Length: 240
Image (cartoon, rainbow, N blue to C red; front, side, top):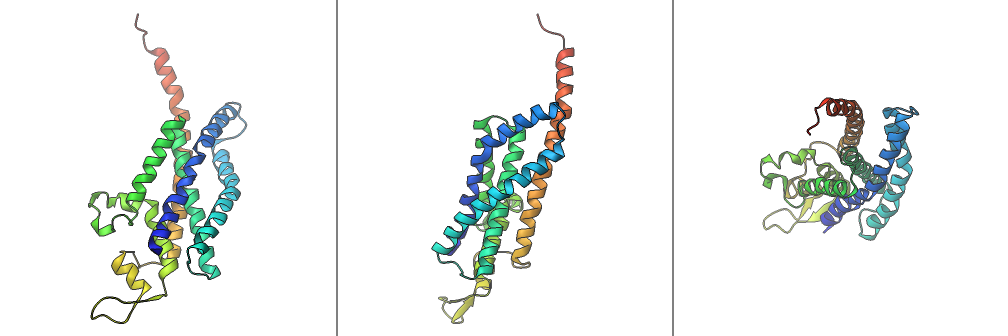
């Protein structure tokens, strides 16, 4: 049951960040006008957008995170709660980065939300909850989608934060009276236990940087391609 609660946080609380897509589209329009006027560059826009979103993301991670954490009976220690909130914040920022990347390619509200929701849905399905990693089809779904999906690392971070160091009654016949949380994670949920929960957090933060760089690169590429397309269209002979 605790596994489902943590998956719900990793998947559906972060899914709410898709609702910010319309504002991303408007920000892109404003940036386009101000960019033409030479007010600032692409790097300043990406950095400013990232910094300005941090207080809001902290707020929506802390309040719903506290409600979700304490009401469902997860570990009460403060350090576990802080890790939970930081991981939720990083995952939410990652979803926002994905939607910003989508907004730079698909400026239409409806198509952008559909595209972002589709990307999220595929990642959720490959996050290791609905099907265990060893049960995923090897082509595409396991390699590379399972390792690309950020839910893999979010789920693992939440699982390790909650179950490492605990012991549970063992219901298996002939087994020891108790079983450790580490063994549950490794044997039943197929969590990669070769590294700590902090590595999962670092990987998610690295993915945030990668998607922000993708956002920056797409804007630069579009700026270079648009004049070429206009020149090509102007040079093309018009059909009578």
